[in-house]
Image (cartoon, rainbow, N blue to C red):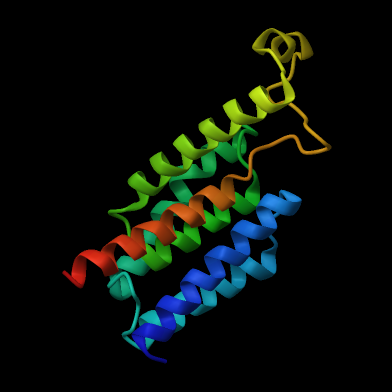
Length: 165
């Protein structure tokens, strides 16, 4: 496996996860395991595109898992999103996780405002429903996994672009 292949795999994996989450609001365990397996192989082969190494991959995975688990416990984040964030920690290491989280949260907020505008749903209507989330066409959540993976893919592309300058 070469670094170029690892970059291509990560970008293809991120796009696949994002497309599935946008379309079905679901990140499969198979997708999570594929990302985890490839991340471990990339680190073992010393071609990880984020340059994390073993220590960075292990600490990133652990921090990613622990950092967002409270959101799962509070029922504001799905289990797949928690696992996905841990996998991104394996790929990216600890240092970019806060930025990825922030970027994904901003994208999710923009998405929510866009959905409210497109469906002409008022905030008062949401409050009257009594729930924490709203439902549009059968979906009751934002595709947060998509926003996480797209943020990581954008960060990788930025690193490659800046490294080539």
